[in-house]
Image 1 (cartoon, rainbow, N blue to C red):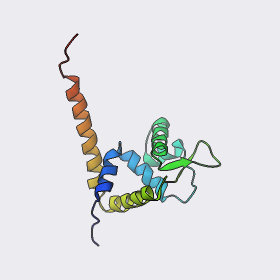
Image 2 (tube, one colour):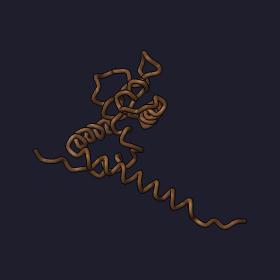
Image 3 (cartoon, rainbow, N blue to C red):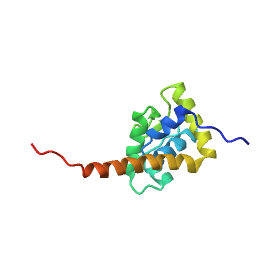
Image 4 (spheres, helix red, strand yellow):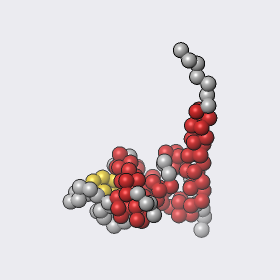
Length: 131
């Protein structure tokens, strides 16, 4: 089997993900049967997250990004529903690529977040001119 190649659009998308749990949440929602309701408590259990609030924040972030929407019959739940066919295709590409390149994708997410934290740390020590 040939390893898939990461497209530029997939790389850009992966670099927007705040953490691996966001990625895992996308894949859980995507791989669930249509209209499966996802609540924060269920997502927290499936992702081994101790805080339901963190899981709720992830679901809200996915909702804001157009990856899921509110469940029509359960207002505190979400369902996988990409806002466009293009986004749906990109998420399908992500699922295929991640399945074959889990370490590469997670390293990409971690490297971006490490780089961001290092920059925040460095910025904390910048000399500021007092007025």
